[in-house]
Image 1 (cartoon, helix red, strand yellow):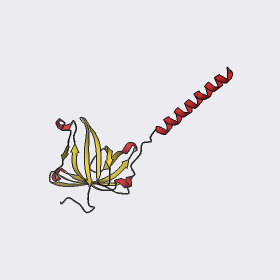
Image 2 (cartoon, one colour):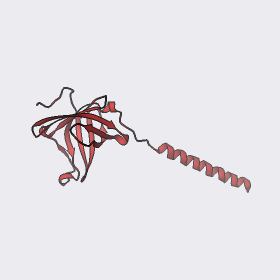
Image 3 (tube, helix red, strand yellow):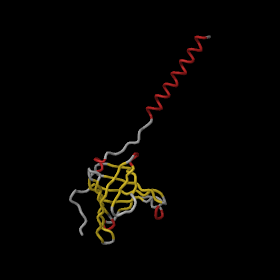
Length: 152
């Protein structure tokens, strides 16, 4: 009887060990996109509104007159250039990449940091999600030539 109980205890210990190893190995750490992968100029080309403005639930193209470009530099500097209602505006500041690909931008054209989440990043596409009152708004950017600029 004593041998049988020891065998049962050993099986229980092994089960606990196997379950513990499985649980710890399946936990993923939140990864942060290295800032070097984000560097470059990105042109705002489409927006996905979901519930916003009546809920089109489709990507909507952005007219060049309503667009802007973002530039992320290796030294975590940030530049945003836009043609807003015919007025040229250039904002500069810094950015910070946080856990779970959260992005914070601190610029001289805003009083509070702009916060979003990078949901997609390839060499040609950047998608940043912003939480709004009516759900998430997704902005799609395409990589552009380093010499691109809006005309004044």
